[in-house]
Structures are given as structure tokens and as C-alpha cells.
Amino acid sequence: MRSSLERHRCQYHHRKWNDPNPDATPEDMKLGAVDAICSLLEPRAYQGGTHSFDAVLEVAERNPLHKRPWMRELVAEMRKLAPPPIESITSFEHIPNIGIPSAMHDMVRQRVQEGRLLLREHGYLL
Image: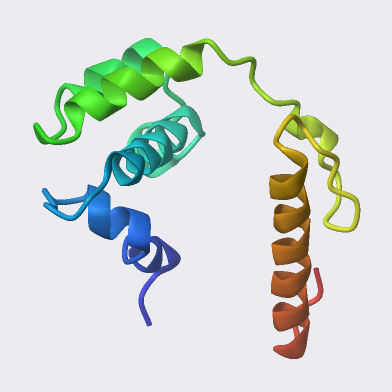
């Protein structure tokens, strides 16, 4: 069985981002950049722990050429944003809106509940 990391890398946004892809749209590339940046901002041991935005830019410069301008652009945009208060998310039952559009918040809540239901069907309790 493949690890969750390997499965994640098979998702749509990675297929557009990982290698140069003539079918990738600017939105595909922005999504890939945000995913890469967020992964570096998080405390992931396999990536050397939590990175600052400056450290993310250093990592970006070691990325393949097709990724670099997108990472630079999105780091600049993300620096302007206040970090969301994720600590206010304390349970799967009650996920507060931490600053995203209402329609997206509703979709996140729905997907979380769908995921929980599927896990329950396989014997997991979350």
C-alpha cells in the first residue's frame, strides 16, 4: 500500500505542478505553489521543520525552473495575509469559519462530515 504522501502526490494539483505540464493553467500553478508553500510553513520533519517565508523563498530557488516564479508570486501574496486562527478549530463537529468565503466553509464542513462517515463505515471513530 502506498503511503499517504505518495497518494497525495498523485492528486490533480500535483500532476499539474510536479513536472512541466503544457496543460497546466495559471490557476493550476498557483494552487501547486500554495500547496508547496503551505507544506513548508507547517512543522513537517521530512522537510526540515517549519520554515519562514524567507526560508520558503530560499527553497523555491532550488526548485525546478517552472515552479520558481509561481512560488515567488504566491509568497509575496501570502505575506500580506494574516494567518488564520486555526487554533479555534477544536472539533470536527463544529468547525468555525476562520476567514474563508461562506460557500467554501460550507463545502469544507460537508467534506469533513463525508470523510468522517466513510471512516466510521470502516470502523474508525473520529
